[in-house]
Amino acid sequence: MADYSKISGKIILITGATSGFGRGTALALAKHGASLVLAARNGDELEKVSRECVAAGGTPLVVPTDVSVRDDMENLATRAFERFGHIDVWLNNAGVAAIGQFQDVPIEDHEQIIRTDLLGTIYGSYHAMKHFRQRGSGTLINISSVIGKIPAPYYASYAAAKFGVVGLSDALRQELRQDKITDIHVCTVMPMAHNTGFFEHAGNYTGRESVPIPPTYDPQVTIDKLVELTVAPEDEVITGYQGKLFNIFHKLMPGTIEKMMANTTTKSQIESAEPAPKTSGTIHESQ
Image 1 (cartoon, helix red, strand yellow):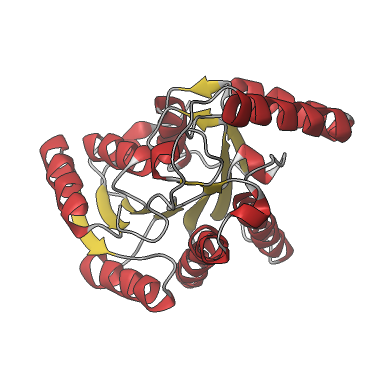
Image 2 (cartoon, one colour):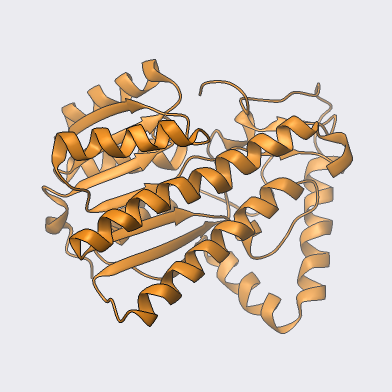
């Protein structure tokens, strides 16, 4: 069992802190007395989350940040170190997506998804790992997706980015093992579809409403796991119990599981969803 009393006083940085898993995790950690560095593009929303964290018992620092911009991420790290002196846990959570056949999604959307979901995670991991190696300890948590293990149609650039996050985290763990470092941890979290604002924010070029790929889960499932990982790190975690089964069966019979994933995605997002206008969502906007 994780010792949640150890969260009190920890310095925990969270990107994508204004919605979904990021916001929920920030509030949960604040209740345990964590000091938080909150990053997202929307400064006004960050201030709201900050006030909620203060009311819950946390000590937040707000740093408006676009994770896809390298200079923003360097500023984020600098501000965090200036305020708190060090970071115990760095959570790369920010992410965007576009749904639609690959050729129907504008190339600028594909580019921004890769910049946000993959490059943003690389930037964050770079600053975190440099700091953790200098300090001798720390936990890096990278949010991927079950789509980072089992691809789904209509999510091509998102899948590419999330597969990249899985590979990045694997490689970082290998480097730590090669150097016999045991007090620095790299966690990869791969959620199934959850009932968050993710699909409302996503770009959508299917001509149908954005809906989760079933089965879907309460976001608290992943939030609870993220809080636990801050004091009890694990290498890889799939949140949503059916995802663990899918992953096991995918290793045994990848063709069958990928066909199942493709059929389920097509039925839910193309055949059954209601008509809706095409949109880039919040891929290029503050959120």
